[in-house]
Amino acid sequence: MSATVDVDNPTPSQRAAAIEQLRDKLPDEVNSYCSDLDIWRFSVARQLDTEKAAVMINAWYEWRKQANVDDLAVAQPDNENPVPCAVRGYSAVADANVTAGIGVDDAQLRLTRTLGGGCWHKRDRDGRPVYIERAGRHIIKDIPKTSSTSGLIEFHVLLQEFLTRTLLPECSQLAEETVWQQVVVIDLAGVSLVALSHIPALNMLREMLARDQMLYPERMYRTYVVNAPPVFITAWKMIRSWLDPRVISKIQILGKDHAELLDQIPAHNLPSFLGGSCKCSHMPGGCVPSVPLGNYPDLPRSAYAHLRHQVQISYTEPRHSFVCETMPVGNGPTPMSSPLMGYAGWLGIKRDSPRNSAPTSPAPMRTQHVFVRFSTDRGRGVVVEVLWQPLGSDSLDDGTLVYPEALFEPQRAPVLLELEAPNRAGQLVVNWRVANFDEGQAPFPRPEEAQIPIQLEYSVDTEDELLTAFSLPPIKRS
Image 1 (cartoon, helix red, strand yellow):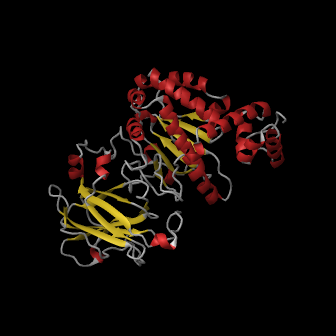
Image 2 (cartoon, rainbow, N blue to C red):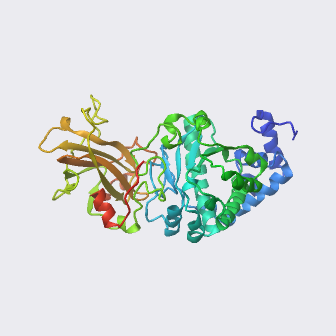
Image 3 (cartoon, rainbow, N blue to C red):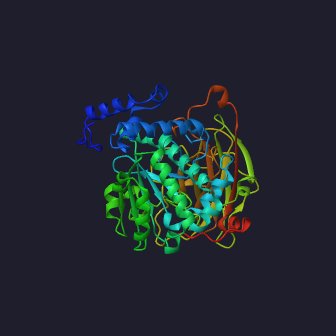
């Protein structure tokens, strides 16, 4: 190929010629395994040098076969595998945090507790998925203690496979064109010189970057390193020596000015702590939950093992309601003697008036935090809605919609929701219903499957009750 080809903006004929030339160098089994996009990515990674690209893609193919990468338990619409990290703003999987479900092993949970927090958070202006990493909050010294280098790489591979198989196809469908790269934001707020010079962790990072460049080339469109302190410059000089020049050209080091981020990502898709307007207040931990930051409860596996209530819902009896009394802070919600199997909410009712927010009042309403843990053993997901009524009121018109209806997938892993209930005497009503067939992307059940009841298990607790029960520190909300 001519050296004058702009690999970022090739003509269709230039791209086709590069793909054909590389395919001519590959064995039949590799050619049949690879898509044209795979061929193009490896060609670009080696600047259209077909000999070098052939060596690279053959090694990639052998690795995938030997490591059984295609058999990894990746969360997709047609299965019940758990997400590998927090997710916000996609329909292929519902919004979720990592919780201790059956499919989440202890090694991943230990790693999650040392990492500063990562989340695929919505899309950039061109429809690419955005991954945000709060790297400045990593507990660097503990990462080598809780994970081996191979364990860290395996986790990273799972993240990349989730991106490739689940998020990019959805983004492509929405954009009506092939979306094949992500935007990465690395937030270094809180990082220290000690963390940046921790040799065992840096060695793990170097190995992970080397594998990433060899196994997932050209999956990154742009990386923004934000809130970079002056001490990062020294570390960056070392880190960039581990990177391919083309990768380096895609990385922008920014300080506390996030204007360039807003050029790439619309404000409503960018977390407020990065200069956007998004808060993801419907999820514990907000936009990017972080165990080291303590912005959501890091519950142990036992917290989901024995939930207080067990009921059955189904496609013929799709709803369940739980009611508890709320009292001013100090007393907390007191569960009623039994949950209500009837229907006590606005779910599925066409609203002629806006009930998606609390009614206006002369002064801000004091609130108390309530947590709901729940899981299901099957299904396409459940929709949750929570409302509050003053004590003694029989009319829904007097109520406040505490949590607008949202789809969750507790069949993948348990769900933890955080609610803000008015700090007044009243009734809190938590409503669940089976997801309709037009909600989410999970496939419809076969007729015989639809007859099988879905086991819903849940517990409802005040914040104090939850933290005390599992000996957790106070939650640090920003």
